[in-house]
Image (cartoon, rainbow, N blue to C red; front, side, top):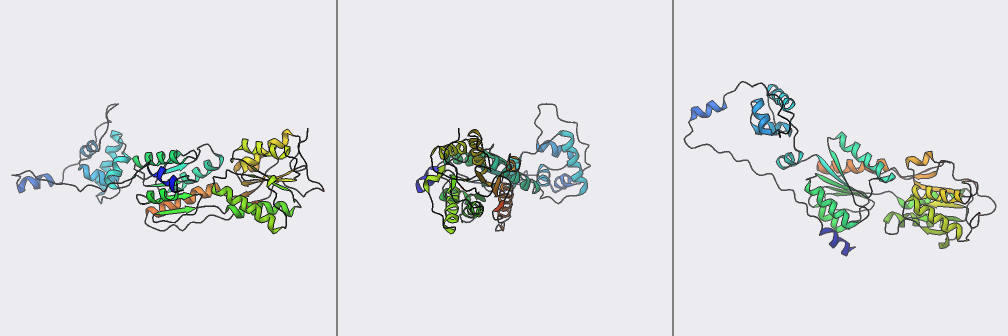
Length: 394
């Protein structure tokens, strides 16, 4: 882990520079009368027509069209100006007439905030992380923030490059979903901006972590199958490099131990949380010759793959083999038959991660907490028959 931190931290440095002090000068020889003349209330001119196509509309052009100083326009856009209603209306009319679009980066340089949040996910097209991203987007949107999404692709160096890109965009904070960056790398990042990370337990100033109870989730799923009379329960585990995979294996073993059932490593096959790996793992189980009557997949995507493997062997779920997943993806309720699973709410994960970051941005300690895992019993698990199934069916 120490080596990983050294590698990952070489890839990014975030440093938000403080706002430079404004300088006000007066031309030598200026008279009191001329100064008074410049500060007298002027009649607000009518805003000019929209700028010609291709012309970059500047803040100075808005100021000239509305009869106020550029600094007044800037402070109004940043929400820090106390001006008369007539001046604010004049600026609004000028912005509309000229088609002015504020530059969030420039506003960030001036006011210290861009109202944007960087989000490092693993894969944009993931059914699980896609739902979490929607939760992030909705929660940030209600607070006037926009997310900037970058894929880490389960690679620490790729995540570090993504963080560097987001820092270049002057985001106000960063959310990392199941990051591969080391703990020390995340602590260093939190010294420059608020950070929320999911998929681990980590404490540091300006940093907050969220994680599901993976042990309890797998224990619930296994206990459900045991309550149905299954004793030979196969497990399709996740990538061992993921902390959640180790937790789900512990939960599976804990439920077996509590029921007095011996753990059999021959009934455990590894996947990588994708559908194809679930299919391949189920085929290895079926070809291994070790009898089993139920399969627990460490996530719903691998359960979908396992269901396809069973279908290809002309084995019926749940008549021949019971099947349970973990996550409760939206597709689980619409599978045929609908998948029994353990709910770990991805939308809630994203929403609470965003809420925690917003709390950090206001200088408050986050108070959010994920809901505990919950069994969702549908139609893929039934009471065990007298004999477990062996091998493949041709």
